[in-house]
Length: 307
Image (cartoon, rainbow, N blue to C red; front, side, top):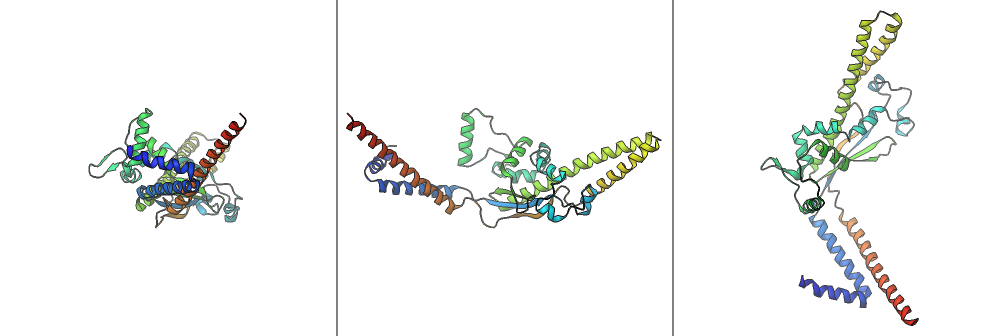
């Protein structure tokens, strides 16, 4: 590293003797590092969709017990609480049940963990690239477990880390986004996660309804008490109506207001924003270093004067 000694000595002399040049050189060095980072960082594309609770005015929602007197406007502007199906959908996004379902989809796994799939050997390998190597070395030094192929736990954790939610214009709407280096893979992953999670909710509710219908039928078969039968029959009719709604072919737990689409241009890294941020940081850091030096020199002069 001897070749660094001369530039370092020059930089140190500039720090003490030419403050404005020190700030300029620091700015240039930081911007050069930012440019290098931009050049080596993979471009990412963002897939996005807008979802919101199913509006209670819809016929299938009325079958599920929604109140048709609550209108569309009240839901859009926050006057109506999101139905339980929507809350359930949001919760199961981070569930092991969804992860286990996605684990059975090889195409999804190869897109979601693209950096770990080797198409030549058709096998899973540790993540590739400088950032992945550094992360692996840090994990090894920290004594963390070695690399393992995709599992339900890894899928669940990766969904929580990479599928992002933010509030939409409407109070109950959610904008769902996912970033990937391949725009088509980004679109496929987001579309699959939303569809499979909705199906998970549909199947779970359908199983609950079927179990409840079986229990009601068993009670009806075992009793001749008219009061009991008058109580059970309306319950059975209601569950049959709910079962009809669950068996539809439209989304069960959510309304997909804006189906998944993917950005045409890369959304990260953002060169201009990064260069501006790094530039401001470089100027601030260099100025702070100079102020620190001047303060120390002033304190030293003051100490000498009091002797």
